[in-house]
Image 1 (cartoon, rainbow, N blue to C red):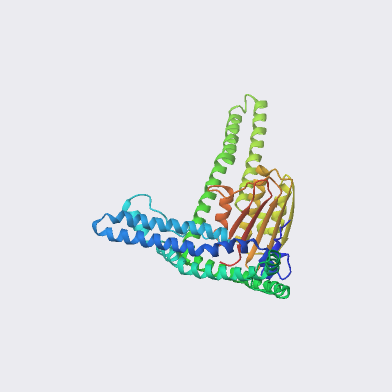
Image 2 (cartoon, rainbow, N blue to C red; image 1 turned 90 degrees about the horizontal axis):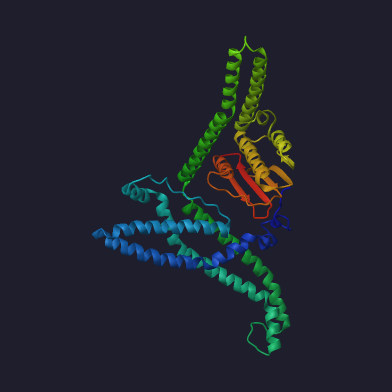
Length: 420
């Protein structure tokens, strides 16, 4: 069954004050916004020193390696910032760099110098100082005001108990009034945090994520890799499966032909064996064709195709497909193989006793959720099945998200746009 986040179940929805309060992203973004100015200051001094020294020494060639090292340094800082932004804002910004040359120092230097992403990385790190300063000051002031007002009754009570003075309220009436005023102040603070997080994330996506050209290049490269991996899989299945069985059938028929007159009983056994091998080869070819594009998906749609996958699973799998009309064929195909691979991994590794598949449509496209109560531990690793699914989704600008902590459960979501 589809898991619904707490922020989606509270009054006024995920963008209401309660939704922002219970959304973990708000509390991941808040500390980042408080310290982003310190990160910006650090990078400003590091880059100012390293760039100045390396350029000054470049006239005597000593600074040329330092220039290259400095460029690699700020690209490494940008890579780290992308990972930090994923934790703080939930942004998945892929590295937009051009393919690295195979060999040659000169080729590597030209690769660094001519890649627009190198200079956008530098621009982002330099922008981090003024942007982070504004974010830090506004965050600190808003949290201090909201916290001071909300805690006014408690702080005034402690002041009264200790016999001290100096707090900004005088009397319990003012203290409780300040506490009530702290509620709208906290709401304003939450919206300020999320607004600054959105602005920072938008700028980071533009500078660290590359332009449309880089995005299309990365999507195309992942599509080519996915197609090449699929071709190798088909070749391997043909070579190891149907081809070997058909070779065995040919050998059996050749032996039967040689013994046709001398040993009819053996001929009968060899023909029966060849017949069984032929049926097995046909079954393997049928499975291979289903792996390329199942006929039921084209004929009857996603609901029937996923129900067929669930029926072949070793455990009970609940299937819910809520689509008013059929999505594009590419979306249907990627959704089908996402479910097929997820259920195959579940059967092999998870030890689950129940699972569910939910497909529905939102304003962006088709969303596929696969859940099981297994032991968890699934991850997207290079050359793995889930990595292949992520590459398939990327060919249409889709996203694959895997949440599978150790101990379970496992939740896999594919968000597939219907327009690209």
